[in-house]
Length: 146
Image (tube, rainbow, N blue to C red):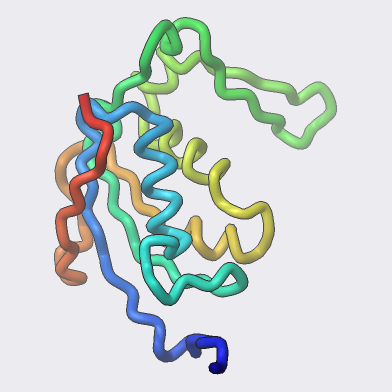
């Protein structure tokens, strides 16, 4: 029996809408990353981009468990000397909540060109509206809501 290898033209990509209201950030990120990778499909192959497009709404209502709003920091570097920066999640969620979800999902994708291609299929919005109605996205219920 031969191993099935899907061709790029045979890959069927769907659009999904996820409501992030009251879902813990880590659970949301891991489930969205699996959809972006295509691990929910029976034709999954590790060396190909098999994933679907994901639209995440209400990123400002995502839950952070425990004392993470106060204790957790997003750390990054500006690529300039002495450019270490950090921002507290409380401030990040107030000012730019989509960035928190994008950062969490990106950390769960492969660290190579394939992961960067998968990451481009993620769209995160702070409100409950999006501009992708033409793609007819289907609603996706995630596990782990409070």
